[in-house]
Amino acid sequence: MKTRSIRFRLTAWYAGLLTTVVLALAAVLFLHLQSYLEGALAETQTRRAHQIADTLVAKVRAADEANIGGEIASLYAPEKGDRFIRITRPDGGVIYRSGPPNSQAFDPAAVPPAAPEPPWEFSRKQAVAGGAALLISSVRAPSASGGTYLIEVGTSAAPVDAMFRHLLVVLGLGLPLVVALAAAGGYALVRRALRPVDEIAGKAEQITQHNLGDRLPVPGTGDELERLSTALNHMIIRLDDAFQNSKRFVADASHELRTPLTVLSGELESLAQDWELSAETRERLGSLLEEVGRLVKIVERLFALSRLDAGEAQSESVRFDLAELAASTADQMALLAEDRRIVVTCNAATPVAVEGDHARLKQVVVNLLDNAIKYTPEGGAVQIRVKSAGSRAVLEVIDTGIGIAGDQLVHIFDRFYRADKTRSRNPDGAGLGLAIVKSICHAHQGQIEVESAVGKGSCFRVLLPLADEHSLPSATKPDSAS
Ligand code: ADP
Image (cartoon, rainbow, N blue to C red; front, side, top):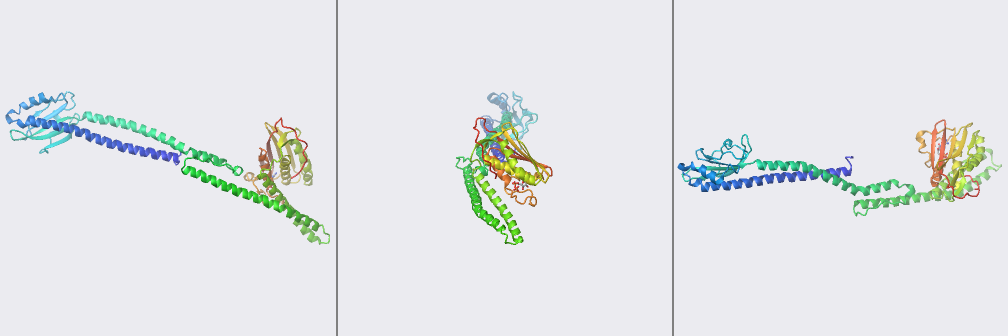
């Protein structure tokens, strides 16, 4: 259990508060009940002591002190009622003391005498050696003989003590049970109250740049939770707007740059062919032309990416043979590889039918082969393989090139990411080729994986869903490179 979670803290606070309140209430109840019961008992016994004082002691003379015992026994029968009665003369001499009670709860002979010069009326709880404590009420009463007698009436405190012990046991067992039940109930309530937070968090986790149109659930609770999800939804709307604006900006910018760059490239080309210019100027124009060519390529790729972002990756959906597409593209690019003495082989004998945008998927093959050739040193080998595995078509482009370091593998599909920062090996790359490949694969419900070892080579693997057997075969597609 996470002790810092709101759920735990609220439940702990709730259980702690409940325990304190119940304990305080139990203590108040306990003390109040004890003083009430003992007070009521003392009152009854004081009344009885007054009765004895008025009816018997007030009339007693020294001569008939001996009779008083008989009268008390016949009138009050203290032994039967588990009661203690003692009458003491002013000089401390006991003129009557009740006998042992029937219950044997205490020994009347062991009850210590009251303190000398006691008040006229008072009650005490008296511990008695070898028995239960006694609750004794004492009254001082003048007698006919002129002396003041002390009349003590008591009863065992055992029944009251037993009742409190019982109450303690009930509280001791009941309190943890009540607190445990309340804590469990509180925990369940807090869990339920926080469920919308879980739902909001779950949905928020799923929102990426591709589904910024989705919204978080808004619980109609009218509280901070509703405000929070509404505020987060507003934030997503603002993010969506900003994202769309930046996409539009890239699309517009790349679109606007294409024409002037094409014009610039054409003008530079015709200028470079002007033989009246010095060789040095023509050489400089040539390198300018190379840079403009690179710029054109970057702008073209940016424009392609912005169209993919806008959902134009699958403008057509036709069924075609991926193996044939791989073989024909490998053939076309073999010339490029030959220049660098790289052997391109194709292993795609069995037809593998997929469905999608033929031109876009060709772009995937072209970009992967182009990279494999670019990043493989002279004399190396590049292989393209197509097969089907389960319900998926698998296209692999394997090279014996420079490879990619493990920490860079996660970034190579990011826009403008280039593992080889020096650009010495690849002056015309811009880090957009693989981003385009990834976008096209995702748009075709496919994925791209890569395995690579530095100095040994790389294997790029494209996985696409196989075409539905019942979909109609397409007409032959015209080939068009990216
Ligand atoms: P670029 O235009 O720079 O080739 P890409 O998006 O096609 O951009 O590739 C991104 C980076 O991934 C490249 O700069 C390169 O470092 C690395 N890369 C791609 N393909 C390979 C490969 N077959 N072998 C080695 N590195 C590669």
